[in-house]
Length: 357
Image (tube, rainbow, N blue to C red; front, side, top):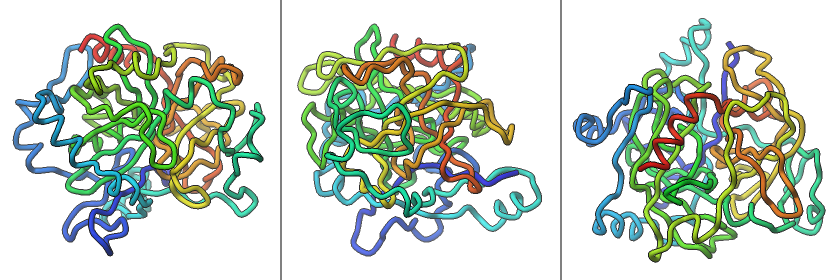
C-alpha cells in the first residue's frame, strides 16, 4: 500500500518543543493509523461518548460556562500564533506493517509544495481561477467568513486544522476532518475551538468552543480513511449562534461524483504559513490506489489544511457553494493530490445528529 500523509499542524506549547511529541507519547494518527491514547479520556469513555444505532459516535465537550471559559482562556493569541507544522512518524512496528503491506502509514505533515508553486500573494490571486493547485483567496465573499481555523489538543499536544460553518437547524454546526476531532480509535480532542474568518491572527467573529463532537463509527472504530469526517455542534460566542455570526455554507450528500470543486483551508507547512485563506480548484477523481472511497483533486495545500471544505457549485462572486467533502490526506508518492471523503449516508447521519444537538 502507498503511505498516506495527513495535513495537521502542531502548536508547540513551550520554547524548543517545535512540534515534537513529549517523551513516551505515540505519534499523532492524523487520519488514522498510529494509535494514541489519552488516559483521562479513555478512562471515562462510557460517560462521555456513545455509539448510536445509526453508526454515529459522539463525545461531550465543553457544556458548562466554566468549561467554555477554561477553553477560551487556554487559547491565548500567543498560543494560536505559534502554530507550527509537525512531522512525526509512526512507531517502528507500524512502519514495519507498512513495509509488509499491512496498512498505510500517515505522518503528521505533508511534503512541502514544489518550488514551482511559491507562496501566493494577495495581488497575484485577486482574480479567482477555476483551476489552481494553490492560491491565496482574495476575492472576499461568504467563504472568508465561514471558513476558519480549528485549534485542538490531543494527548497534551496542540494542533491546528481547518473547518467550515454550515447551515443547520440549531445554527451551530461546523464540519471538519475526523482526525481534527478524534484520533481514529484513540483520543478525543480537548480544547476544541473554531475561529471563523481567521486572518493573520485576527478573530473577527469570535471563538466558538465545541459542546458535542460527532464522527462516523467506522472512523472511531477502525480509523477508516473513507470516513475521516467530523461534525461539531459549537457553543454560541458572545451570545450569537455561529450562523448568526458568519452565516453558513450549504451541505449536500450523495451528490454525483466527479463534480469540480474549490477546496479551502489554512495550510501551515512551507511555502504557506497558516495566516491566510488558501484555495485550490479543479476536477475531482476517484482514488486510483483503491484504498478508500474518497475523491482526489490536484492541490498543493499542506499541513494545517485538514478539514477545510470542498465546495461544489461554488460561485466565486458570492463565496457561496455546497460542502461535499473536506481535505483529509495525501499519498506519499503523490503530494500534489489532496483526497477527501465522499459525503454519503453516514455523513448525512452525523450531520443530522449535530444539527439536532
